[in-house]
Amino acid sequence: MLTLYGIPNCNTVKKARTWLDENGVAYTFHDFKKSGIDA
Image (cartoon, rainbow, N blue to C red):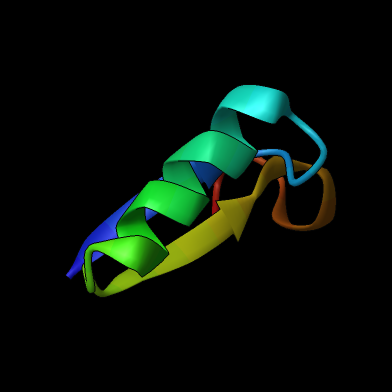
């Protein structure tokens, strides 16, 4: 499974998440603001 790292309000991350969802790609999202870098 793919892990996407970023912050949720970033436009590039939003576009990436939309593309992944539309194309049926399974992923987990790692939010740097909530979880930090070492998660």
